[in-house]
Amino acid sequence: MGKQQRDKGKRGELGAVHHWQDVFPDAHRHLEFQKGEAERGIDVILNDKMGIQVKVGNQVPKKVYDFLEQIQNKDGELNWVECKRDNKKWVAILRWEDFKKLI
Image 1 (cartoon, rainbow, N blue to C red):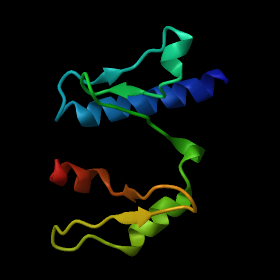
Image 2 (tube, rainbow, N blue to C red; image 1 turned 180 degrees about the vertical axis):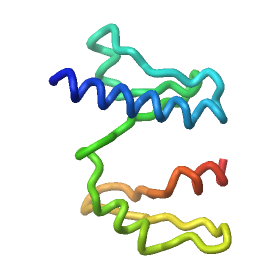
Image 3 (cartoon, one colour; image 1 turned 135 degrees about the horizontal axis):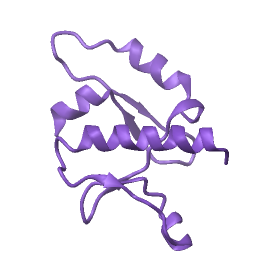
Image 4 (cartoon, helix red, strand yellow; image 1 turned 120 degrees about the vertical axis):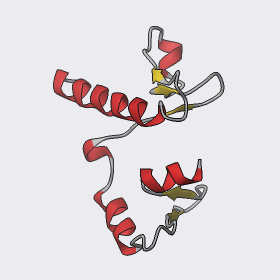
């Protein structure tokens, strides 16, 4: 992986840390020091039991944003997109601002 890709990933992870520190003040980037840690796939540690993976750039399909545009927020209501691929589990996609209202 090139330096530009690593830097973009680092910026994305730091952006996620910044968002989450409102809720989890000790949130921080997970720096992978051993091969076994990389297998967990955690980019940001929120607390002892929770971590997240961050995706930025072309890894995120543009279609996700198109779906969210179809359900515009009006008067503070919460909207999200639920999706499921064949033989996979359901996932929910929502804007950060809407997610913060839930937590």
